[in-house]
Image (cartoon, rainbow, N blue to C red):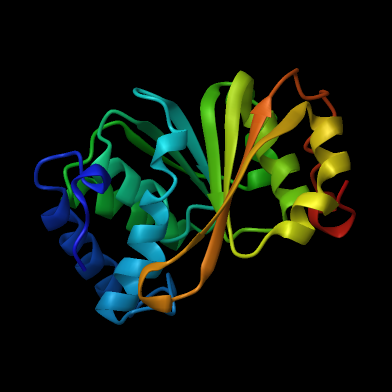
Length: 225
């Protein structure tokens, strides 16, 4: 898989992406990080897709990722955009171990991994701290907004990587209003090689999120706003 220069602004990025692919596929034998292990499919559906949203991360952004899993989009973004500072929030300890290992072996600086549930992350010192919060393949938008909006500072952004999300965007109108978020961008695009349609949904934080959110105890998923 070849990338255009605007996808790979950092020298040596393509080599590190290859190394990352090797790390994921090796660790995947022990812990389920992805069902996609064929190289070309991996590079399109995970790497290319992760990098498709990099324009929504301002230079030097202090970013959080909720539900990091195998490190998509955070690790490909960090490889290609070393200016971004990342805090990776993941509830499964074995996946946290992988993320720490990947950051260390790839020589990625300013990457912090927290073994923390999404609904707990926005209640403490991380609340309204970040310029950008992102998530990919974690939950429906109305639930994701409740997880992520509390982490974003006023004036910052939430970037959601989704499949076909038209229904979810409509479904999340109420949640966005309650949580202080305003829909800014809904970008649809096709993955290379006819590998499917994707979208990125970007919300702007226009006012502080009310203190009672996230509600916790699983209510974000059971009874979404």
